[in-house]
Amino acid sequence: MQFLRDYESLQLDIVGLFEQYSLAILGEASVESSARISALSWTFLLPRLIPAPQALIRASRPERLEPATAKVVGAYSGGQRDHVNYIAHLLHEGESLKPYSVRCERIIKEIKDPEVKAKSWGPTTMLALLGFAMSCALLALSIHEGDGMALLATILLSSLSTLVGIGSQWRLVLPERTATRNVPKSDVVIRYPHGAFLVIKCDEEVARSLYWAPEECRYYRSTRSYRVISLIGTLILMFGVICLGNAGLNVQLGFAASYIILNAAYWTVAALPQQWNWDLSRYKRTIEHYQDKEENSDVPSVEKKRTYTSALWRAIALSGTGKWVRVAGAAPVSGAWDMWLQKAEEVIKEHPCKFDDRGPCTLPRWDPEKYLDDVHAQVQEAADMDKFQSSGDPMV
Image (tube, rainbow, N blue to C red):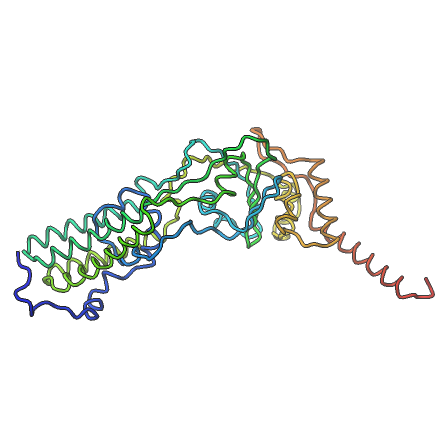
């Protein structure tokens, strides 16, 4: 096994080394996108090659998952939040909603387990196994070439993933409801920035764990231990690059090919839907279908334009109440809109939308656009009359 011929043959041009072997540290964004979900799996501890391993070495760890921007409001409870929890957003596939669309879903928790896990054989697992296979191949190549520095580089750069994995391992726990007191109906309405609405039928346990309580990221190692591990990982990365710079040409070509393949694989996985990585089987998600009489009328389809007003009306009809509209700030504060909301409440109370096994729910026949135009005209006419009377015209 050949290491260094003599001390003078050691290459220590650090800047040149990192520029020369930049393939090993490129692809940081793709690695970061899958790092959190990867750390939930045992495969995160496998010794393996990772492109841009510095992406896993941080001074601190995130305390929560990134939420989605939307307004969450309890249809009957009056609770509200300015974002949708990460897992809830994944479960509902909120990014698939088109502007001014309305969808109604029913969520049932089938498995009484507060912990959400990664899929056993998801894309991130395949990435870990691919990196492990690359490390094994380079280890065999280094031994075959009798290249001691290449062997050290393979061991150091591969063990880095195991070390960082020990410090980053965590589990995701969704808080459960412990109180037994009676509460209002737990249905939830989500209003997205592009005017889409999502109406969720669920019980209090599901509502609390998915929408109201914060998601808990519980790490297995303390913050102090993680920082020590990050320091050691940084040193291992630097020594690994130095050893790689002093390895033979054949092994260096093998490393280059491995990092090119891994970068392509990580970018491919980053482009896949995140739902492919998470095991959400504990929740049963059913889309509740409905029919809109107004949309099924004889009006030509080209004249049926999706508007925010019609979307708001469908959300009110599907939720069975309009009390949440003001709480969510979903309608302007004006006399015309107050009259519109009052009328919408009256219509839905007279003809409630009922979901059953006999078929889709049918929304009441009501034209929200026309009624809003009418009340706006009434309010404007009343305002003009008041202005005319207050002017003191002698003809009055």
